[in-house]
Image 1 (cartoon, rainbow, N blue to C red):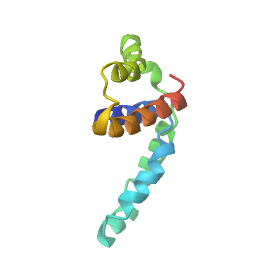
Image 2 (cartoon, rainbow, N blue to C red):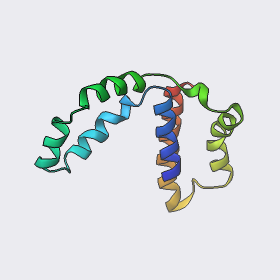
Image 3 (spheres, one colour):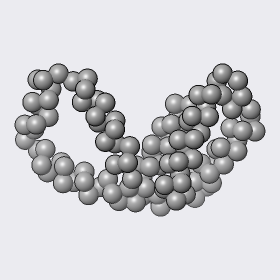
Length: 111
């Protein structure tokens, strides 16, 4: 389920839509850092330049960089998971959650 979740996030990022899930994850991460680390984040010398570059890149659609053959394999993942019976039982509960996220991300990415 972790690999499928990761692939979902990669697809979302490559499609220029990483901001849809990034804000929630950043909020969670910020709750776990201390005050000293927060100060370092605020005063980074190259922060402005990095933010400008990052903001430009995060909205760029790069799905076209994925090889067509690999893209077809990605499209068939949900059917493969179902055929192998990975959605059944206790482990299937976790897999269903990951498959739902995968379908959500691929739908947003218009794959």
